[in-house]
Length: 243
Image 1 (spheres, rainbow, N blue to C red):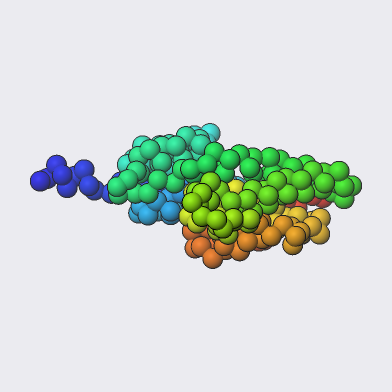
Image 2: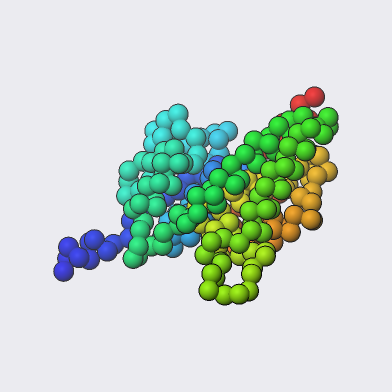
């Protein structure tokens, strides 16, 4: 019985993420938020430590020398590289106790792959960025088309009714997946920084994207892990005003 209890004991997990400009609150880092969301969605107990990169504590220098957040302590073992951490969590925190978060459809991961790179080019070339804006809009159109297109599992081949537009909440269905943990933090940054420095709003005609963001904002796993708008604005002040 003792062995069984030991095997069912929850792991000890501490996530280290970038601190904001005040040195305490959540800072601007889509990769940190990505892992924050994954752990929250897994339903596992964990603690979060914000790291002030301007004065990294000595104990953290010893813990993870040369490593910037995000990184993880899992039962006392250091895990670095957010991609490998995410893969480790998906494999280790598995059913039946914890949910799988991998999307069913590979396209759910692929569809937003270039949007952050297009945004980076867009904001770096402000204000003479009409070409980059068109490139960014093309990526939003691609995302919008995907979100509005019914997934295979939404189509009932035995029904005479045809679903023309998807009503799903997120990239891969009505549940948040790893694909959303990857894309939503980036969209949060894009929305705030583009509005602040380029007077750019995600066009309202992209109804799928608008629905997606609205649904995400209703989930605490996303809303409560977002950095404050001021953190994003401060992070991109020098980027957008480099000229």
